[in-house]
Image 1 (tube, chains in turn orange, yellow, blue, purple):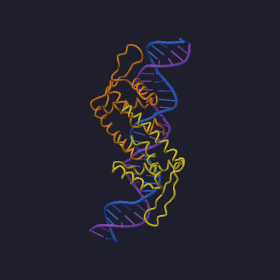
Image 2 (cartoon, each protein chain N blue to C red):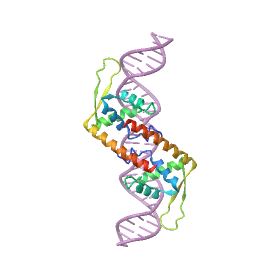
Image 3 (cartoon, rainbow over the protein chains, first blue to last red):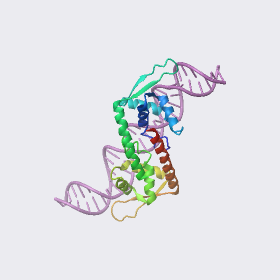
Image 4 (cartoon, each protein chain N blue to C red):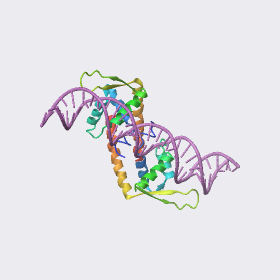
Length: 106
Length: 106
DNA sequence: ACTATATACATCGCCTGTCAAGGTATATAC
DNA sequence: GTATATACCTTGACAGGCGATGTATATAGT
């Protein structure tokens, strides 16, 4: 059990949705921004990131489209949907509640 | 994904150790106290609780002994070990750090 | 006597998110 | 020509949570 697995587990989707609230983005960029924001204390592992994208898209919380780069590697951009915004807000509330519970118990 | 699974995942052991810091106790009582402390907003599922006991004892963070009840169901009491106290403090620190990271990202 | 409920412990097997390992392709810098 | 950065993706194993199920003792109500 380490800081990047069990304790963070369950927040991956919320973290991604939060990033997409700011602007459409793609996997690599989202992860880079997460690392910058946390002074390299945290990163999403690629397999975790991409499996979360699949889940979120399957649930209708994000949609995707290919970027129109004419150079460099192709990018798959993601956009948060209306349902995704609702789910994000719900997840934020869950977090606030869970945080209080945990603080009470540990 | 709800408050009793992914977000709480990884806190089960810390919650149990915290309860045992106060006094030796047994599964049923620990769970009851958790429910009371959280106004019935949270409980550990029995399977989760007992599998955590196995893990914690296997890791040397708790030890167990049978109570001397002469009536009613038998109770297996648990006691936190010196290693358990250290692990608890480490887990608390991990939580404080993880909490900051999550707040930054969601 | 029977039934329900509370107390108390325990195991089995499934589910799901994480992630190590591996793979593909393009572009730049030395 | 080879290392590094950018960018995406899949497979399979692992581990914790938990529904379902089982056991046993004691009490309260009918």
